[in-house]
Image (cartoon, rainbow, N blue to C red; front, side, top):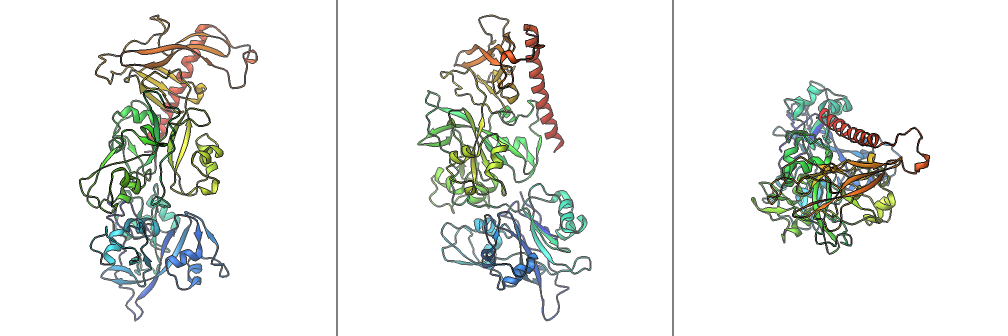
Length: 586
């Protein structure tokens, strides 16, 4: 996952552990007795702070220099609030040494308890520098060993070079996921060829998220694409799970986590990372067409839902079969938690789950189990699928509630927050997704069968496919899957009928009226059998009584089967359309 250095305006940090943020500085334009110049870096605080706090962090001697770098009014107070994700330009003095830009008076940082070099580089200094660079600059032979009270000098990137004969201010910009060289060039008033040349890139496709790009402000270096890690170091991602609704002999449930790859990858690679045994389970969790190829491209920043099995232990949701990750060279627990597993878990939780006494000491080849968050609890007596959502900077509780079809009070209560202002960027939020109602009984091996809107699952040893759609009034619709059984005890999937007849198959409608229809529903399975039952569902819009249904609606059995087919066709078309959009976005 290495990333190239970029000088013209943007440094992308996909692999902070290995990538240098240093900028080229040939020194050909700074040969006077005053061989320094002014340079800028783009800093993004991981949380809301004060302008004076940023001045203190970077040890900017004169407050007016910070105001000037950002074009702020000269009368501005040191106490204005700076929001999370707001970029603040930091003025620094630069000189050239051996072809590289070197900050003349680097800020100093005093190590506190629980600090790690990766945390200091990625979070505190917003990925403007890598932890190997901090280690090298401070003559630290082993980056795993730093001590409380130790003072570290931070080698921020800079340059003094002219660009194409033009005097410029170099600006270090951290590249955001989803950005392109063209977009960055347009934003900062330069050109794609200049950015590519300045940052040593051959093609625009070489750009990677979190690379630090040297961009000129006029041609300033820019660190485009900063990941802000607000509380990963200290905040637990575990979800409450009281186990009051999963007390049957099969006390597990289905849960989801939202994963974002740090770079472009394949769907099969995500399946492999999370060790999802059956590829169609990954497709179903995302509502992708069943014919989707494992080699489908997934873009950086594209959200992929990961299906996991959850159980409750001591009031907390625990993943039943956690994915395992093998440590490679230059790995670091914080890097594994924050980048590889998309902040869905903290490095402390990985350490505790794997009985690692010192989080700074992991070895190449060591296998780590990743404790992804989950829950099985009902919410306000409703069955839901719990979804672990990593909060993006700038999001609000109201926005998240609207996006996922829940309410602000529910989100606050579920996540133990008193006020919406408690929300922090990169917090892992427990979001309840409404599940379809079903006829599955509590003795079934797949109880509770929780399926969220817009998703589908395979159950009963893969012999049954069940879909959930709001278009069908949140009533689970199941049919024979047509697949081979996943259990070795079943040679073939049994034919699934209702009412003891060979003509009424799973999913078929038997009787219907203006606003109701009776159909063959899935009710569970055992090691030997698949069970069905006759269930009734409403076909009228919510609040519309049968008497109020339009008189022109036919009520014949043939029409109702046709209506059922139409609804399934529309649902199938919707899935196809979603897949088409997904394909075109690649």
